[in-house]
Length: 186
Image (cartoon, rainbow, N blue to C red):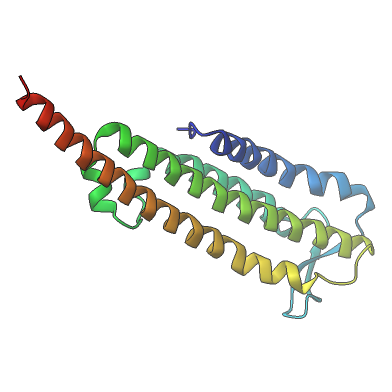
């Protein structure tokens, strides 16, 4: 299920576009690639393993991106299964409040997968640039981002979900009190 929020929809489209882009990128570079292409790098960003052009290792990035996109789309259907703060409280909320939180959880999932997709695309691009001689090695900031950005996004969204769950619980409590009072009024 695609999130109903504007950002969630944009992230869904980005996920699909990034997945398609992962396949188009090696195809765009294919004719310029030498017979051997780098497929693995050391901690300094220098190539340390090579493969034949067109070999299966060259397609690991696009295959991985596709599997991740499929996994994300499947996970979007089950936001109640996500391990988030206040999960038990969220399950007890009224359906409308729970739906808003589930939408925020879907947005979180998409944001994390899009972030990983962008970073994987960057690694794919630099791999192809190194193979064609347009770059010497993968830049270390990209590697740092690869590790930290999805984690930072997860922390941001988990805090947002916890706050939204608290607000929804408070609002649900107020509505219960208000409906109880109005039921007793003549």
